[in-house]
Length: 152
Image (tube, rainbow, N blue to C red; front, side):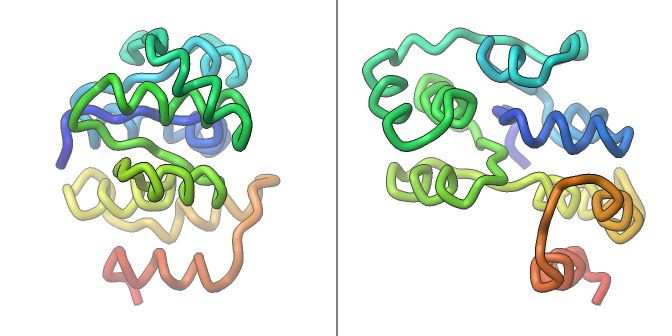
């Protein structure tokens, strides 16, 4: 498992809604985000989250033409922090990261990693909690996540 993760706003919001924000810290040694994402989150960040400014301003400005500011800043920060992985739930942001050769996962991938590391015993209860929020995902994604977690 990687030591450094950069979390986008949707990851923070979703994990916060299901009272599982600590999963980020449990799975990854260092959790980074940007000031833009911290602002979008709208709550105080946990003390273990490192807020890092993007210095790759040209990259950030270029990415903002395609993505929202949070996603653009997360991807730009990943260029600064070598060997990092970005948590992105947005399809377009994932495609941009892929095109740029940046490693990414999603919030559900984080849950699967937590199970594989023995941090949680099952992802299904978390997915069921997510279903009770306004976060939308297909039955196909639900089933694929269970399969990846060895629960199907």
